[in-house]
Amino acid sequence: MSDTPIPISTTLRSPAAAETAPRSASEAAPASKISVRDLSFFYGEHQALYHNDVEIAPSTVTAIIGPSGCGKSTHIRAYNRIFELYGKDRATGAVLLDGENVLGPDVDVIELRRKVGMIFQKPTVFPQSVFENVAYGLRIHFRLSRAEMAERVEKALRAAALWDEVRDKLSQPGAALSGGQQQRLCMARALAVEPEVLLMDEPTSAIDPVATAKIEDTVQDLKASYTIVIVTHNMQQAARISDYTAFFYGGRVVEFGPTRQIFTKPNQRQTEDYITGRFG
Amino acid sequence: MNGSVAGQAAGATGEFAGRQRRQRLLDLGFKSLTQASATLVLACMAGILLSLLVRSWPSLQRFGAGFLWSSQWDPVTEEFGAAAAIFGSIVSTVIAMALAVPLGLAIALFLVELAPRPVSRLVSYAIELLAAIPSIIYGMWGLFVFAPFMGSHIEPALQSWLGFLPLFRGPPIGIGMLSAGVILALMILPFVSAVMRDVFGMVPAVLKEAAYGMGSTTWEVTRKVTVPFAVQGLVGAGFLGLARAIGETMAVTFVIGNSQSISASLFAPANTIPSTLANEFTEATTPLYLSALVELGLVLFLITFLIQLAAQFWLGRLARGRR
Image 1: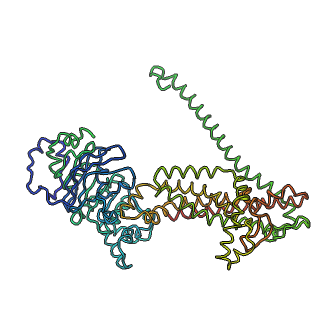
Image 2 (image 1 turned 90 degrees about the horizontal axis):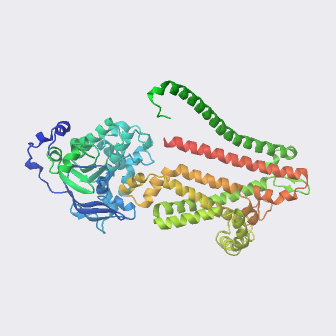
Image 3 (image 1 turned 90 degrees about the vertical axis):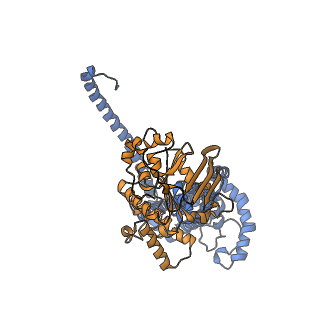
């Protein structure tokens, strides 16, 4: 996988030049952590997703881009079955996590959601202290001693690059932190239960640029241990932090491939129009 | 107005000044109107307090502070003390709150978190209808249906299980403190649960999603996220119920038994401040009797005022704790 960020500004200005960029053989799809097969989604009668197929490799960052209302969030909300909170919504097809269909009837949803953590558009700090926010999932899923709990909370806060900023504020209300810190607190909370997949639904859209940069850095650090799927409105962000990119339009996966290829030599006209800012 | 072209610039300037003056006048008028309305509320408060004080002056002079802790209430010898009525008001309200708050919480949680949409809507309508029933209806139903049922079923049962407590001794006649408390609970329940339902409805969906997304059960989400997030509003709902319960008159008057006595037994007849007032105003023939009743009203006014103060203080503290 390429580690160098892609200079999107240059590629956007000269898509023609990008066509000559070589396609590396190493970018062929490895074994998938998540395989989405023929996923369709319905809000009551209204169909929001049409036959989505996506393969997500382990220890990669996959970005989902596309204009508003194209089904990006809806798509990842199937991965942890969070859509089920609302009675009439349903998904068809399959989302295989390590080969097992998470949409199946016998899936332990609670364990699924431990394995597949989620970060939302706005920070969702619980009305508790900083420490208790991170300990939230640990208390639900594990039975830990006080010392183990403290250890795991610190580890999670370190993983979210927040420990140094809050080590003296652990007993303060989580809501007292700044917006960017709150979002990283939510990341720490999700990481504490040692998930395998992290779903991020526009995690930086409500946050200032400095805090955004911190979160992007954190995502890069986390990539080694987690499979990350990030929905984003920000194409530069997708280009900066992702290895693979899926372009959604009208509930369909228009194009999916290595980020470098999507941003330099898209196969579909729609993708090119979108990333060059011609619509959306 | 904005369509005036450049050629009319001079005229437009004059017009602009005039318009500005008009707008300033209009603003001033509007401000005065709203200010007057707000002042009216304060004036009413002050007026009520003042007239209560003036009318209760003879009684205040005669009995002093002893009015509050004497339970003597004898119109014949003109000895008046409010202790029994105050005690009755407080105990019946405590019973009502102890029943209505947990029940209201459960109903609200069911409606918001658990019930399917059509069920939730149906029950919500029923609750609002229940809140709209005039209290005299509760009173009549309480006297003819509920109190006899309490006397024949509930109170004997309580007595056989918990009779060792002084609370549940004495003849189970159905008319008394317990029945009044339960009726009050029924009356404030719709209020409390409707407000709590709205409070739960205001918890952001994404916060609940985040909690479910961590792998929580509904119980865990409710206990650790929804309720703590909504606690301020829930307390507010409780105080709304409390304020209503302590001032409620008709329904209580029907079932409480109207006896100026303090008894350890919840089965015994008792009295509250409002029901004493409702019962005895027509009989108050001497100026001192009337004055004592007005002083009861003053006491109720002050109790309600203190509850409001406590509520504000509590809510303020919660708000500071959150930030």
